[in-house]
Image 1 (spheres, rainbow, N blue to C red):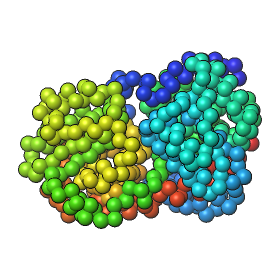
Image 2 (image 1 turned 30 degrees about the horizontal axis):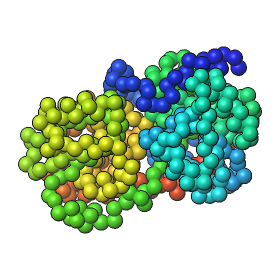
Image 3 (image 1 turned 60 degrees about the horizontal axis):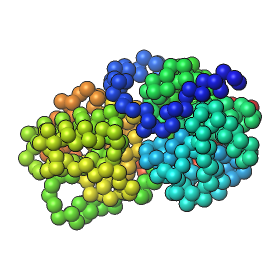
Length: 441
């Protein structure tokens, strides 16, 4: 036990994602290469041999029908551990997870290394107690705080929500005889880069159960040595009803403005490659006649740099608006005509799922779990990060084809409502916890 504790002493200085700094030094996601070399997805056993998304959904349905009968969520003592409650995708998913558990009568508790951040009050409003365990800046002290809190709460399951809290959960669980679940919320590869080779490997392999939110992350985790039985595919979900737009034409007509409204939402950090998007918008201006405007919602360390770039390209403030952090993004999707994402890497992007739920046509880079959400050409258009010419050509064609915009948006909404609705999460948790209890026994 001493070795993992000692390692954590150098680990937690990350605190939250914001303190990692720029992702730029990691290189583009494209340089990582194709996951095709991993072989078929059948190595994961129950997921099926063809590696397709449909195989996953068959497995997911099986879990819903059979495993949920074997475990009563209301009788489980569940404790989550989060590194931050700032406004981000993993934190939004945590809110959804806790909301889903509360909806079926479960009584989870949340431990967090930070306090007073964006999602804390909404989570408390669900009736979920939040305990701060980050009083000390020292990592070993924080481990002891997690252990002390768990001794008092006596959970059966300790579930990490962030990759960089996996070691805290694993060490605390082993000390107390709990069943721990680690998290992989991006590709796995980039999370290991952020934490370092040794700590990254331990964060993948020390937890006896891992919940990954994309098949890309599942494959990477198994490739790095994790036994397939330890890895569970827990897909992101959204409150699709909150983002649904029953009559998009009517909602758009209410704006009384023919300007095409383009939208992107995300942290203004290097990973999101908003600089790439601005360059594409500058080229788009030369190729379409319809007036358009891009709204960028979100904030981050690169905001000033991106504003300077937009100004130098002659885009800001006439063609580009930096909206900053928007607490309620549903109106943004309702007022938009198209959603764009140009990231170098992602997990399963919440913003893409929200845009799909709103029935927006989407053009985005094919990274992380995007391919599990979008069937390119049917429910959206996807391109490799380095294919800026293809991205631009598709954007121009789509702007000039309103009928195709509507068709893509309708298919996108149907996919999200069918496969990623918040209402499906309790069954997924029942399956995950059944597997975790067995793996740790």
